[in-house]
Amino acid sequence: MEQVNKAISVKNLSFAYKGDYVLNGVNADIEMSKLTFILGKNGSGKSTFLRILAGLLPYQSGNVYILGNDNSKLSFAKRAKLIGFLGQQHKAVFPFTVEEVVLTGRAGYVNLIPKESDKQAAYNAIEKVGITHLQNRIYTELSGGEQQLVMIARVLAQNPKILLLDEPTSHLDFINQSHLLVLLKKLANEGLTIVAVLHDPNLAFLYGDDFLFVKDKQVIRSASNVDAWNVDFLRTIYHDKIETIPYNGRALLVPFLN
Amino acid sequence: MITKTKTLKILLYSLPIPAVLFSLFIGPSQMVTPAAIIDFFFNNSINSNLIKSVIIDVRLPRILLTFITGGALAVSGCSIQAIFRNPLTDPYILGLSSGAAFGAALALAFGFIPVQLSAFIFGLLAVGLSYLMARKNNNVSVVSLILSGIIVSGIFTALLTVIQYFSDPFKLQSIVHWTMGNLHNANWNKLQTSIIPITIGVFVLFIYRWRLNVLALGDDEARTAGINPDKDKLIILLAATLASSSAVAVAGIIGLYGLIVPHMVRMMIGPDNRQSIPLNFLFGGMFLLIIDNFSRTISGFEIPIGVFTMLLGAPFFIFLMKRTNILWNR
Image (cartoon, rainbow over all chains, first blue to last red; front, top):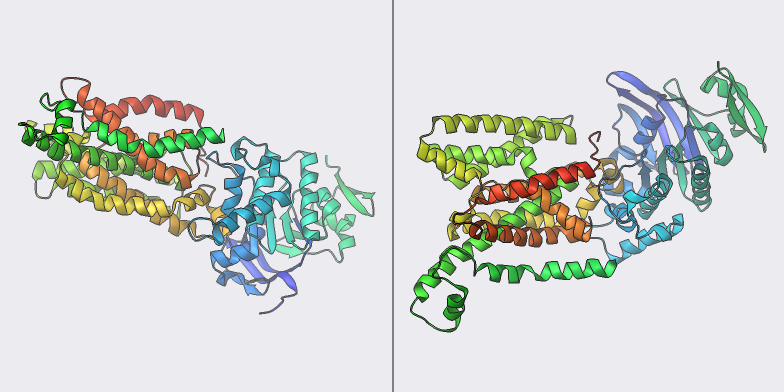
């Protein structure tokens, strides 16, 4: 047991895909009860990093500690009680009701058939996300934004300490993106540790507590969170022709490419 | 809405028994009229030995065999659709039917092992081959599984043709009959050999019924929710293959049945497998019984049941294909 004051602690992690390193010697910590965003360009390895944290990808070397537990030694059921993961846009095939979808989040607790207490946990998650009105609707008939909320309720139903989200806003319109991030912020304030990969640094700066950047096979932090929106720093991450506009003590990014 | 589903459910649970009893009255024998059967149960009339033999030795085993065959195919189809997250799959697509048909033909042509046993072994072998061919880096993708199923089916169909080509007309006829579905020569022996593997397979699928809901949402979703999808899918695939290959071994090929019934059940009561696994068994059994009643009474001779289900099933399959968006990219 070590580093129990950190939600996630990554030590010297390397991951290669078909012989090419995607991540090489990564060290990173993720703070408890904060909303942390992972930023970076397309193909930089953000999703790979998140999937490693979720225990979905075996890595070549290094260690990942989840609340002090070695991630590679956790069983599926044990890991599910610590970490909840939501991948990019989920596609369902069968017309399950929202309640049935959320209940499947209890798989790590259920032996074969869910009990009344599992149904209660699913209902609590539905309530927490604020979608009780959708409870009996058919999941496949919902809008993209509603489906995303259902999937978040599903992850919350498994009652994790840490929530990992890959591009949770990618298929939502801009108002729904903000609704979702406000919800994440609220959940983090209530004590949940949330780590999300985001394409859009502006959304991240509006709602995030902490920021990690993936670049050149490394996961880096700005010198301080205030430096996260420092224009010189951001140019090294994204592109040398971006500008920042001050907003509310933070900054928004505008690309001026051509 | 909810009360409608509930009424349907009560109906589906209560209909099989009357359907079985009703089927006892149906058959080509002119002597064994419904009145005679009622008479048989209440009085001891002169014809009772004949009636007894028609009911006990002919109709009852056929009814029970038809019922468990239909139930096994439907439950297996439903489970396979859930684990492959594809509503257009069934055990036959993985090569089961062509493997079993080849096995049966081999036994019918050369006669060194029992037909049912040979059909069962080759049915299992075909699904196993499809599975192994599709396996890559400990991972079985739906697309490669279906493609390898097509290839395995192709190989066994080609081998079947070779056997048919070299068989004498009499053997050829029995091979063709077998592949069209052959519930008409049901007997207690066939029921005895198939009931144990079918019960085991269906029972495993029944206890895994909620897991099917979890697996139907996707591998990553299952894994991060705390179960091992690879292990569960293998167990479910084995159970479904055991049940359906035992059904095929004794009843021949009943085309498209395992694909269509799960859809009918889903349309009636929704996709929750906690409900639909038991109801697939009951409805699948009952519906095949009804089709079989038709196939043996609609004309002077028996129409093979496989022909019946195939002709009914094909338009329905096309309708489903047009209606459903299949996710081939997963």
